[in-house]
Image (cartoon, rainbow, N blue to C red; front, side, top):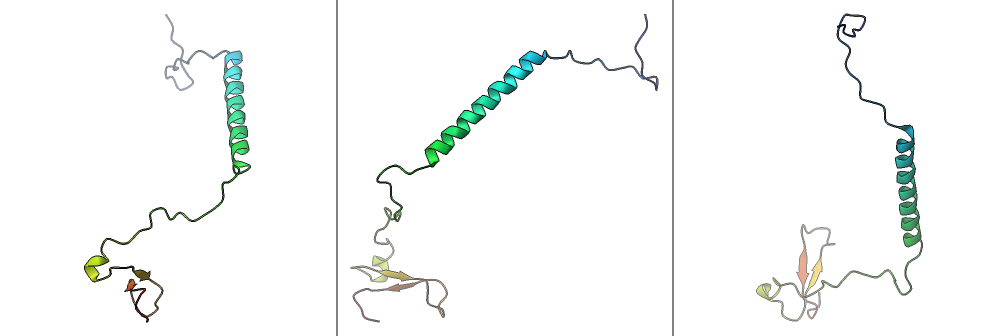
Length: 98
């Protein structure tokens, strides 16, 4: 009984049987077809916005801040973050001038 050896005298590792070429080709072709179909669907869906869909502000969560009544605001509040000499935010009463 003889063993297969390499040049350096080590035993050769067994190799896995080769896959049939047709099966591999069919799998690759099927994956490419699915990828192309997905790409076409994505391009078609993103090409045009549905009728009546306009870009508008997402302000559905706007409301009176819950902390404002604790600070003495009852009718409304203006939150300002654009004052250069102030760090943080400034609360203003819209009914009070200045």
